[in-house]
Length: 260
Length: 260
Image 1 (cartoon, rainbow over the protein chains, first blue to last red):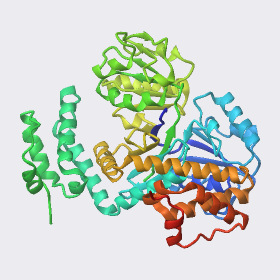
Image 2: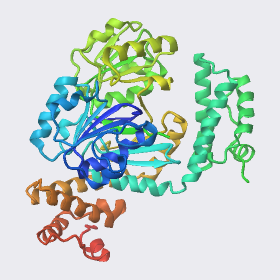
Image 3: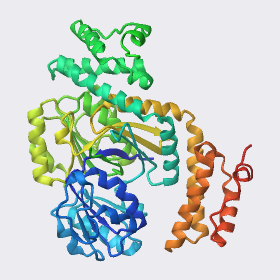
Image 4: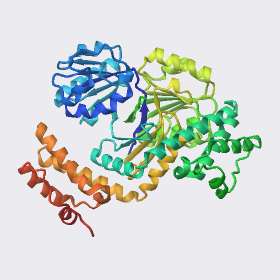
């Protein structure tokens, strides 16, 4: 069985076209707006969950004050989809078709592929053969700095949701995760700095391997307690000898953690 | 802070270009080949981990017997990257640049965006500003039918790996997951069949809500024990009354599970 390639896309300021604004489109919505994408919605009927995401009261036209930080819709066209609407922007990074008419969905899909080629990212809701990517169940952790996707190649959306919920239970102390992430980020960038951000192959490999072994000693359980300053001293010492032999685990758990 | 949009891409038979074949390219490799994508690698030096993925002994040219099911490389060009290699295919669904020369990486990035536009999916390893998507840490469960991505918007690859490892520990009984997934898939498709795959809005919503409530009663813990046949009888009965009031949890846990 072939697998999917799961990727995290940066969509800030990129054009996304959403055709339809019913129940299914509404589930795409909380995934799209936080990306800061420039979202154009084409739909005659609009589900009530959309209302608050456009500037108040205004439900068509262009949101002139749009900025990626505001996480609002950029444009609403209150109409059935017509081919000419593809011309509203020079390109669409992603096209989402969320209408219930399958025949019409198919013709929109064909038009898009004809115009933009097979590389066009497109997803026709509920019709797997017209999707070159799938959504899945999402979970954000560590103050939204960490994102998790659970997908099943379209096989069982409900199952991915259950697995997502189980993962959420595993990581119920979000604060510790957030601290751990900040500490690891700091450790990584300070280590880079200490080695003058050297791009020598051996230096890059030493840094990577050092961080890997160090964090494996602690695991997720202790990372939020790391004492970054003393660990950097340890790194400097080991780097000068090009040594990857860490002190015994006991010592790592006492000397380099800050337990208040 | 803006978030990413995490997606699962179907790449079977789609062209992917990988420039470079060193250590970092090697980490992309186990993510790409299982997708059945048509992978072209352009690189002068080739890391040893690549060897077994091409037809034995042959390390350049085109793998004539390539098929997406074989999970091998389609083509290797043993050369530094040159612009003309972009012409090897009509399009590249994804372009990955994994070379250590940042200046050269930047010029390849610019060429690609100029030629294919801003929608081209491209990732220049280790240079976030030249990436419109990120990789992350991956985990497969349930016999590879369930895929999980943990990403941090490029902030801390090591942290995503630790979280991934923690999730792996949570789901250590892979067999039960696999059975649960098969059962939910069966339940869903049989329910569709029982309602003649009706695309009436009210029917779609009833089906979705019924499955949601039903699986929420069981949670992931019991799903592998579902007795699909008796649950379908319950569904038929509730569907004929358009009722979403399930029997008490006790009854759900005894009558509709098959505990051998």
